[in-house]
Image (tube, rainbow, N blue to C red; front, side):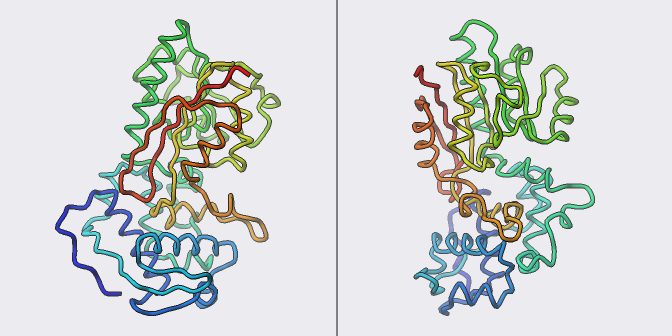
Length: 345
């Protein structure tokens, strides 16, 4: 591929990481400027295993969105090139963007072996071993410098709810993961720890959270299973917080319905989520979303659903959207905050 001239405008770190990932996709697919091909032939020639085919199709959509290729059904024409990112030190860039350690390690390692990953000759687990796990990578998926602003906004909204209700809030955090949002809220509202329940499906994550924050409560909660059966009665929470976790739900509408029932009428929901295709995730953590053979990929490969889906799902499940905000600017993946209230009926 022939390189475009580097823009005279300084690229943001977020855009630089996207360009690094986009270039890796194009190289792994063997794209050459001014040539044509087909998706089916590319999959066959690269030896892509069936369970990763969805990922290659998402790569092609991302490349099309950036003007590198034009898609026409099964055919494509390479009509552009990926601009130079200007990145000299990938590790330094990842640190600047505050990517979680295991996510950064997986991304850096995967970029060098994408064709082998597509053929299942190398697994994500092998790239993370011996000091990281797939669980660690999933816990940090989507997190970066971009999420800090949303975490702070969540903490501020939590404080406003506390002031309005004039008593301790019964708070449940779903999929607490790395605890970044937990820490943002407790830093803003330390007294919330007395009635703050940190939940995660992973026992390991819960143990780490409890050790680091002994003042909070922890419990197991799986959004894909009935909440009451897991010991979470209806109308037992004033606030539910889900930071970069609900996009892992098999059915987002069903998960939101369970959260609605957990909240008392007038209770509030704070969701942060990546919306759109994250190019770094497409070349790293998204391999973890490839299904076992003969099963379907989550939401047809829409791992980070668009903003519109969240808005529709919230309305359909009995929530009214109070406020929303996004960060990410030009980035193909934006990070969004949804602040909603459970309707009285």
